[in-house]
Length: 97
Image 1: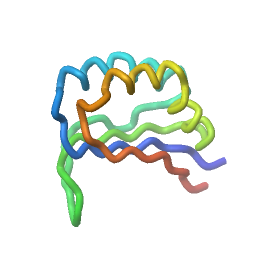
Image 2: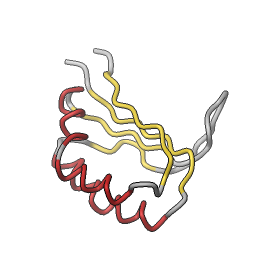
Image 3: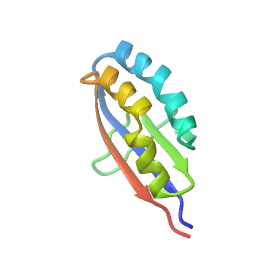
Image 4: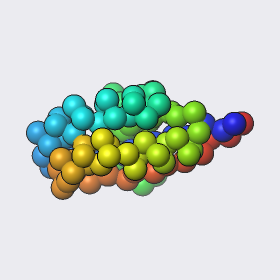
């Protein structure tokens, strides 16, 4: 079965305190949803229209599991704290077999 992935590419971080508060709640929510963080922050080399800002990649056993984790009450609470603290491109994608 193909894996599911959360991919977050941050365009701007306008409120680092909101991001820190979000991270405290999001990390346990992701883990509870079956996610494994593969990339969080670190060095970025951007090409084309990419922005060399924070990037996060989280793996789930399936796209269904990834969607369910995003929709969970615990992750929604983390999102409410993040609110307008960042601008990011967040996608859930299905991997290949």
